[in-house]
Length: 337
Length: 112
Image (cartoon, rainbow over all chains, first blue to last red; front, side, top):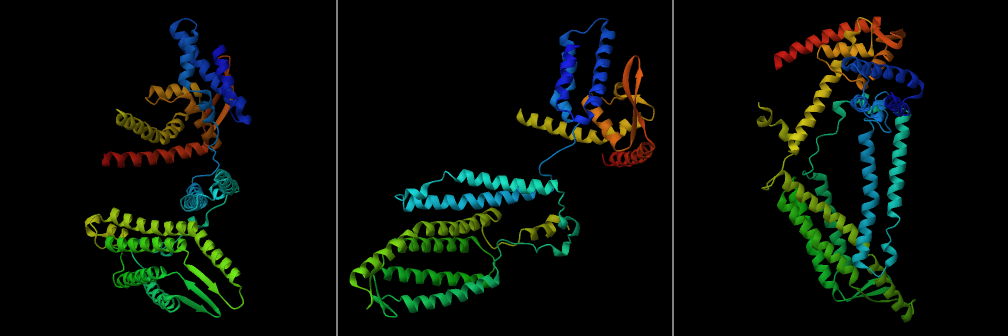
């Protein structure tokens, strides 16, 4: 019976303390009964291999012991989906922007090695994961009940969301803002060799003309798209592609503008000439330094545009206007009416 | 080959799920008369419902902690054994579950 005793000892380690003796006595009795019955049947003592077969059939010690323990979890099934969502948002929110900034500096300003350190990224991720898990584990242990599960009302649920619908308010705002900003832009930045700003004279490089007319064209195109969106408030693959094209051109132009050293000179009665040159160079350098940050922002903006096109192509591969996905569920063909 | 394994695993999972609820009912029904674990297992096996010790004893403990069974340690054939039987609450529960089982069974017979 040595094998049996060793088996029971292995199970004992994992059993709940208060019931340990009781459980072992009962299980031992059952296994001894099985062995005795087999011995009576064969008319001899069982060999070790035969006892081993009985114990193996009973299951691994840990597996057997765990069946006696109540089901335990750090974060239960109710809180777990929320935990996973919060963790994903925090991790993506902490990792993606830093990665993009790192990438932008790597592409735009590789000489600045100090920006390329990513070592503490792992620590940040661990901190987020640890504290989020801890907070949810505490919530689970303290028996937090989600009030929304008991008090929910179908009438209070948010309206059916259609990601391809363009809000009319958004289009109106885009048109109004586009017109106002363009008027201001034309008034202030109309191409000319110098701009007088109070008592300061700013000299601009001739290349500004190219940027000015390009920006103006793109701004007008965006206002045109917004106007079409106002009357046809669903994205189509063609309009979404045009938006991507114009945003992409705008992003490229903006990045070129930052690197163009547009400022040729600054002069003011109160600034000495040497100081003015120094100031001009400083402003040009500072503008150029903004390039990595601009790249990140523009990449995020363009990725939204790309995602929109992919979404349209997935739902409606041949193009055309898109209705809300949920609406389809109530169509006669689907519900068989 | 792997799809066949997947189907087999899926069948096993669904079979266990189907069996889980039935086992409580079977155990309760067999404990109208007092039995200890080993004889209970044999009685169920003789009626075609095999149940291993790793499943039966935790189930007996759970049913006892829910007040549906009572148990007592007693010596029999020179060995200490734990004898279980239905408590009054267990008898009532068995009656209710039995009726529910009949309803489900007749519905499923119609459906299948």
